[in-house]
Image (cartoon, rainbow, N blue to C red):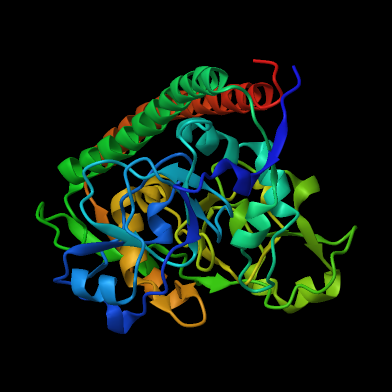
Length: 399
């Protein structure tokens, strides 16, 4: 099916709106104000997240000649992540304006269905156009001028509504899967707190020790290679923060360091019976060192924790993965050039040590919940692939 193609800006009627948000500085804001200032953090892919908490007074908004949002407006984030993500501004939000890095799109309702246009903006097809017009190096963005010139197909309005209804249903199913995954995490947190309590306040009165006391006395916590140099095809595999998980990373996908660099960082070579924690980037992510990884090395962004004999390593590993302890890492993270969880803070992580049988009971519960969550993640992956396929067909006239 062939549809006419128009420029994005042509989807807006004279009575519509296609503009950037407003330049609102910190001095213009007022926490007691009656006008909500919508931020980039509020804009999800097809979802208004409602996360921010910034306000200004009506008086100041009028002085700045701000554009007030209307229910049904499409909000397009001109900055990552990802660039160009869009959502519909919901009803019952009161008086709201938005920041300059969000584009307000109020299309011609006689020709354009707003939900159809939102789905189109979030589609891979349109995202590829956006990527070709991104500007900036340190802070990439799409300008409204570049957005205006992008091309969109224009099916008849009834067809737009039909497509939007199908994609809305697919999106609703995907969101239910995401909500179920979040509920699984919430349940795991509840099980943890019910069994052990908060390790910081320790309401159950368990023995609570610092993580450093569980370390092999012949070894110590340390981070890895500071400057890995060039990737060496026949070098030593290097585990980085993004490689951390429950399973052995694919060695063919790992970066490798030269033998000379590896020899300078012998203390961070993996020996087995260790736990790894990301201290930069994906802070708090925990990794399991398998026998296959013995002899590998770790990157600067990873801390190695050699667990001593007699300690239930799997219990400590799952304990550190729990959302309650992950929250501790988040609170303790210090910000310099970027958030960093240093070795000293990791060493002081409080670990509750209940009786062995309770540790085993926790592991049994953890495995059951994680098994259920794995099934949900597989379902979500299938659903996201289906949604992507539907979107591709929808905007090429094949749905």
